[in-house]
Length: 169
Picture (cartoon, rainbow, N blue to C red):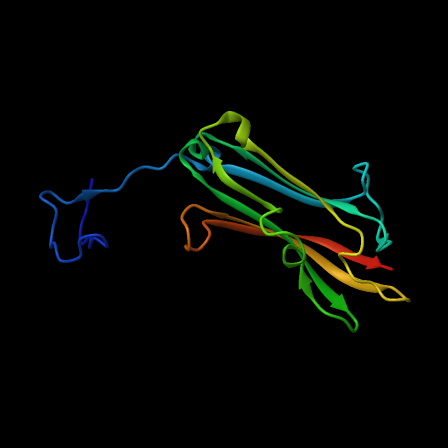
């Protein structure tokens, strides 16, 4: 069924298509599902608890599980990060700004490949990256992700997960 009064964003000066436009029927949400998780773990993949020595390296792990047929048609760059907000005095920071550029990213992701439906980015954060003072520094930590399809454009998919408080000493 044609849509009446439709104005094209691509051809706004064209008053009408020959016989109007028809809205495409997009499959139900089961055609595009995603699940996300982010964790701070120790070198063995185990939860280090809420208190971490600054002299110990730790692992950050980001996982995205994609389901549904429409992911076949999407490609882009995933970026992941941990945001540290100080509870008390001290600087707030993004972990990605303290690491080599791109180590928390998955660039060139292509949904056409079945093996790319299970996205995992792991990175060992070197000892001393997160500051802690003599009495310990307490942070509220949140993980973020974004999927960008085109350079310099806003992401098409974003999200976050609260990792809870962590103390570094």
